[in-house]
Figure (cartoon, rainbow, N blue to C red):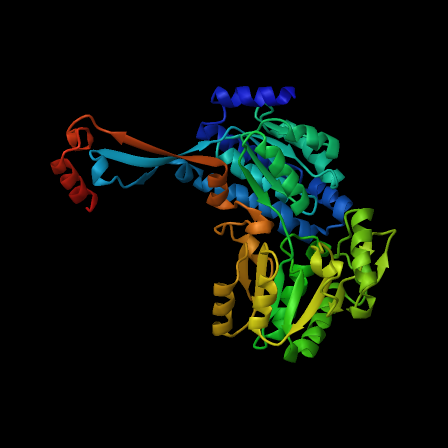
Length: 456
C-alpha cells in the first residue's frame, strides 16, 4: 500500500511533530465541519435516518467541541511532565515527554460514523501522528463523504481515508502500524487484536457488551423514565453505551413500566414510526437480528413490538422478564428493545451483573447513598453513571473506555492525547559529584551506606 510509505516518510521526516502543524490540521478539520454541515446531516440521515438535532448533538457538535478543547490545551499536554528524582540518582532531573507513535490506524463504527472516526483522529493528530482512517462500510454515505472531503482539507501526506469492506479491511490489518484503535463489536475486536499481535502493535479497543441499568426502589420514577428512554432509544438504540437491560426492584415494576410508556409517548408520540426524531436500523441484517429478539420472546412484550422491514423500522419495545438464556439476554442488543428483569434487592442486581462480563457502562437510578456506594464498590465497568444515561459522554474531562470484554484503553480530552502518545521517561544526570558507592568492589561500608541512603 503506497500511501503507507508516504505516511511513514512524512513521520520520519518530522512533518507531524511541530505544534504548528498539529494545530493547522485540527483547524482544517474544523473548517471541514463548518463548511459542510448540511452535507453531514444529509449523510447521517441517509445512513441511519438521524434527525438534525440528534446528529448535531451526538456527532457534529461533539467533534467540534473535541477540536476546541484540544486546540486550547495541546501546548500544555505536549510539554514535558517533570517528576521527582530519588537521592540515589542525584544530581539529576527526570521528566516524562509525550512523543507520537508514528502511523496510526483508526477503525470506526457505523452507529456514530462521524464521531467515532473523527474524535479519535483529533487525539491522534494532536499527539503528532500520521493517520489512516477506516470508516465503517455499513454507513456508506458518511464513509463516502469523509473520503471526498478529508483530502480537500487535510494534509494528504499525513492523513488518508481508506474505504472498503471485509476484504479491504483484512488487507489493511496485515500492514504494520504503530498503533491501532478499533471501535465496534467484540468479535471483530478479537480479529483486530490478533492481527496487531503479528507486529506487536499496541491497540485500544472500544467494544460494547450488555450495559445494565439498576432501578432502585428509592428513585424519582418520572425523571428516571425520561432519562432512560432518551439514553436507550437515541439512535434507535444503536449506541454501544445504551442501557441494554434493566434490573428493577420488584416493588417498583408496575409504576416504572407505566412511567416508561408515558416517557416513550411524550418523546416519540403514539406512533414512533411517524416521528421525525426516531431513527432506523442500519441495514437488513441487523433488522432481522433485532426482530428475532422480539419474535422469540413475544410473550414478554409489554409495549411496542411492531416492525416494518421495508423501512427497517423497529418500534421502541419493552420486554418483561424474558428468558435469561434467550439471545436478547445473552447478546448485545444494539437496537430499540429494552428487557426489564425484576429483582428483590440491589444486592441481587449486583450479583446478576457480576455473573456476566464487565460492561462498558453501568447505570443506576437511586436516591439511596448506601446502595449507590454498594454498587460503586462491588461492580466493575468502563463507566459508572448515577441517575442518568449516556450523558457522561459530553464530559471530555472523563476518560471513555471499557474494561475486560468491553474493551481496553481510553480516550477523550487529554486521555486521548496520552493514548496516542508514547509517554517517554527521560533521566538526565550531571557528571559532577559522582558517588562511587554503587561501584564494585562492594565493601561492607558501601553496603551500610547504601542501605541508609535507600531509606531516605
